[in-house]
Amino acid sequence: MTIAIAGMADSLLSDGVKVNKLWKGVIAVVGIMTTLVIYGLLQEKIMRVPYGSNKEFFKHSLFLVFCNRITTSAVSAATLVASKKALNPVAPVYKYCLISVSNILTTTCQYEALKYVSFPVQTLAKCAKMIPVMVWGTIIMQKRYKGMDYFLALLVTLGCSIFILFPAGSEISPYSRGRENTVWGVSLMLGYLGFDGFTSTFQDKLFKGYDMEIHNQIFYTTLCSCILSFTGLVLQGHLLPAIDFVFRHNDCLFDIALLSTVATASQFFISYTIRTFGALSFAAVMTTRQLVSIVLSCVWFAHPLSWEQWIGAVIVFGSLYARNLLKSTPSKLSTLRAYSKWSF
Image (tube, rainbow, N blue to C red; front, top):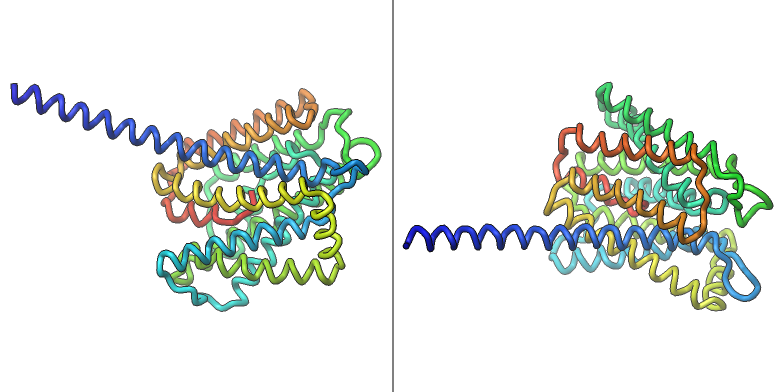
């Protein structure tokens, strides 16, 4: 009787642990998918859908960068204060600024590219960031990569190239008369990939060179970004027109506020997922999120896809899932650092 009761207790305890982990998994997946999918759809809506009866387009991408960074900076500062960790800079300030400049250029290219290419094209192109990251890693960190890494990176790049070069004929850019402006769009996406690769690599170098908390780097980098983006808006004369636009179009103001909120909230879910389930599970969720974002964008904004683009998408996501399964699982902390970049 005692053995039977003990067995039942162990079984209930085991079931409780499984249910608890299941709910944690649901929270992690729903949190990441919801925040980042909304983030992606809002990017496309703000940059490609006109506002008001006069059909005005919001053109000030640097203002979006400023709003995103000031929100993230405030939250990271609050996190440091609440956790009673030092607010003092750990590294020289100019190194934070270097990351900030690169990150601003990354995000600006990302938003500007939406004027010329659709969100599905941009999302697939982002998957090709493996190659610039490997190039910068070799130059800055003297890293060595395996042959399989290069092979999968080339496969992803091939799939992205097919997706970009064979658009459906009826896809229209709101900023040009006729089809998507592939030359400008690809140029901006190449800029995005290059700057993004440098940003993540130099961040990794700072983490390894200094005893630095994640939120410490986020706070000082986003603070520098706030100052730089605000200065850029003033020098370009875009600050007052951007403010005037959002006050004339309250729905745009709401979209920008929501964009900044979900971008910041996504950092919490990313941290939670990596710490709870590890890097491999997180990578699979992020790959699935990109696929869902593309499908929703095609449905929501009526983006047609050619059969060549479907083939390109299969190559890209097949390669990414294969990479997640084949690679050795990195440490949770290193992966968390790699994804704390505020540009998705």
